[in-house]
Length: 483
Image (cartoon, rainbow, N blue to C red):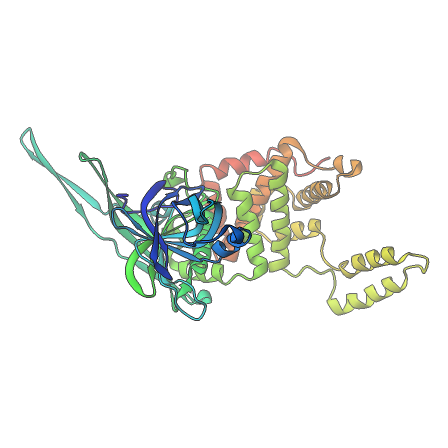
């Protein structure tokens, strides 16, 4: 293994010795293979010696190990974290057979990580996150300057100067963390005749106190969501470089990547909805607002990001977005027809009015409907959300808020109940597809407003975006509801 950088989409294999941290004198030879979709350690033997009579408890014995250490043939240290036994074989002699296969939830390359703290886990002090689209989003002037050494017609050489751009730093109080944008030059050697130098912009999370691996992974992926929102590109984590509490060296962390973005070529920065320059003055406020979201708002974010970033059928995408808009209304607006104390009296009278011959189960069903009868319907929620926007913002979503809300709610009701009566009123075909696009435009506007970006600026950027301006125009050519 001759790699110096380890990204989530890389494929590689490591040959060497492997052992359990608590049993350093029992080492086995094996091969560890990593890919974007899988990782597997094939061990020649096993860490335990057992008898055939113990075979029934073998799986339980092996799965209790949380960490495996490795040392490659070229002296690279590795730590496998979160071990699962995939398969094992026994010989009649009572020792494990030719191979035992393990998989790991996380892989740390560069050190033998130590378990620390009361929770007895590996803790990190910082994580440097490589994200797709970061360089174009930050949109820094090229830090490279190239000078040719030419004497007349004779080319003598080429000089490349690199100037380190300044780092930017923000305080994210909701998660007691400092987040930095840093740009570094990275050199890649491809054979003896080709050298590539690139400037890579990353974000670095430095919490006030050490945290476990899962905490950092969650924060990194949550950061990719606002980057997706403001750029309108599918930003994803590409790699993690880490520091451990008891080891100041920077190591690499590998895990199963999310389902999107890793193999996509980065698009030109001119296609981004917002660049960092558009948001720099209020970027700290945007980060704080994003990371202070409550559980309901995170439900909204995950639904919208799922619909926006992953491949779904037209129907599934529509349902995700319709549900997201309903939850967004619940999270950000009052959604009751009358004050709660007034409705309690109404509900009490309605429940008392249920005839005595109504069965127990039927009565419970009616009581439940009455209990939630004060909440706005989906149709009412969507209409109020669109009407809360300026006229210019409404125009990029739909032609008429009331008709649009009726079309969305009737279509959602059809996909919920699938009756012939509802089918005749539901959008289908191209109209259904573009209804989903209209919901996504509405979601973009509402989330960007929630982050504190002014509505007129949002509308301006939407109308100037090369793709979204076409999406908005094409969507308006299709009906908001069935006639």
